[in-house]
Structure formats: structure tokens, C-alpha cells
Image (cartoon, rainbow, N blue to C red):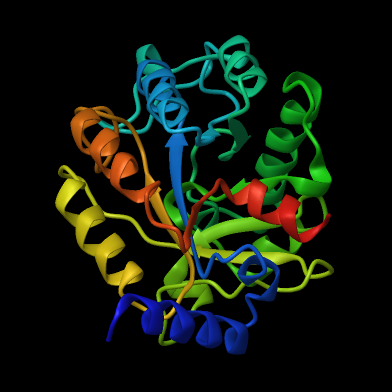
Length: 264
């Protein structure tokens, strides 16, 4: 199939799947690289790499990561690696997206529902009080461990526009999310790899996605160069974005930016 036929076919397929709001811009594929936890060094570098290509980074931070009470998450997330809300406000002021990624990175499906919802409430209250320009109508709650239930999703969606959780919980026979109408509250499915380096994993997933009919693929990443669970290398992220920005049928957007497009 030649290039012109491929683009025409992908556009028609995307329209059939509900991607009208983006096909009007000639985009049939949306990719989100969703970085978790709040590693200060990695997040500043991730933001810089995105800026080099005119892109906005998708950064999700543990609300208490900078506080003395934060004890870390095993080997993968240490208190000495974490940034604070001065950092997150700085990165947000540079145009990047900063969203909530739990209060203390607990698996909310493994604790009582009342405790889990109290954790979410504490996280979202802290974001509203400390992140400049935080807009709950366009916010995305990113579940720790990509672990949630429909009840937890429903609770979060009373205060945010979307939740990001494990794709195996939200998607059936597909790796990509449907882009719904603006009135819908979104349950977004993502995919991740770890604990080792994720360069090869990301490369394979992105190539498969780009060869497919279209949709919205969310890949959940963490730190760079050894920071966090399943990190990617700085070199790889830079070269990946350098290649991807040249693809005319692809948009690379944070989750909140997609939601913003839907609510214009």
C-alpha cells in the first residue's frame, strides 16, 4: 500500500472508531508518553527534551513525595530523588502538564475502600491548594501501580475529568483508547514495562501502533537513565521524539491536552 492510500485508509478507520475531532486536523494517531512519580532530575530533563521538539511533557507526581513523611516505594522511588511543588510549578509555567499520581503511591485496590478514597481526596486537595493553575475540570488522576477498580474510578471521576489506569482493566481486544465525546468522563487505559530498561519495549509498541489504523496509545513511563521502574534512556527518548515529530498523521500530547481539545 502506498503512502497516500495508507493515510486515506487510516483516516476512514479512525472515523469509524470515533476519532472525528482529531481527524479534522489530519491526525489519526495520538501518542501519550505518561511519566510517573516525580523524579526531579529526570522530570527536568524529560521536559527539556520535549521542549527541543516543541512538545509538552506529561508529568504525574506523587503529592507527598517531597514531604518528610514520604518513605519511598521500595527500591524504585526514593525520597532523595523527588522534586517538590516549586519544581512542578516551574515546569507547569513552561507549558508542561503536571497531574496527580496518588498521595503516597499505595495500591488502592489492596486497602479498604474508605482508606483508598481518603488517600485520593488528600492528593486532589493538595493539588488544588499547591499547583498553580490546577483545573479539576481538565485534570487526570493517574493511579499508582495502574491499579484501580470501577468503584475507585467512579469516585475519582467526581473530581477529575479522567483517570489513567491499567489498560487490561479498560480495553478489550485493543491496545488503544477510543477518543470519546466531550461530555464523557474518561477511563483511560495505559501500558508499561519494567523493571528493566524500557527502550526496546517502547520502540516495539510505538512501531506497532504507527502501523495500525489509529487511536490513542498511552505508554506509562517513569524516570530516565536508571531512575524509577522501567526507565528509558535519555538518548532513546531524544531520538524517539526526533523521529516522531516528523510523522504528519501523529500527535504527541499529554492526556490533559487531549481532554482540552475535546472540551473546546
